[in-house]
Image 1 (cartoon, rainbow, N blue to C red):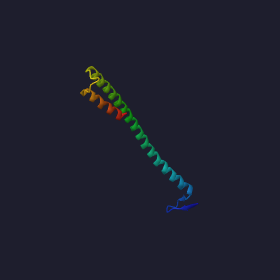
Image 2: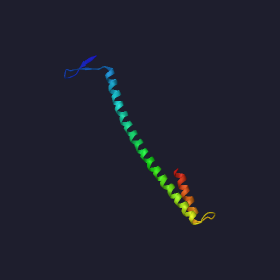
Image 3: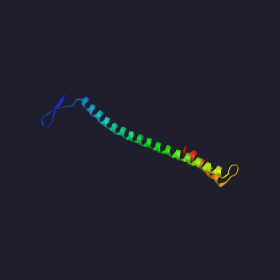
Image 4: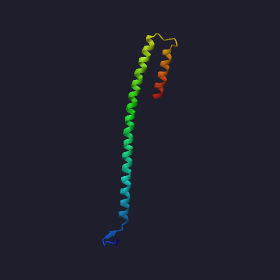
Length: 96
């Protein structure tokens, strides 16, 4: 089917053309949504990497505290170093 416009040029009113335009608009919207999801995934991956680095740093610190505690001879007694070790382990467990 065709109809005429005010300029005299014929236009088509085919329902398939309207559906194609509708689908193209939906594809454009979904493409933008996909880009946003991709950016969020990249950000989450970077966050995981920095969290893993922090865990390694905390593990090294815990080992250092344990070494200091053993050098002080704090085994078997509840010294201030014992409590530091317990707090460090609690933090480590919460992060893991």
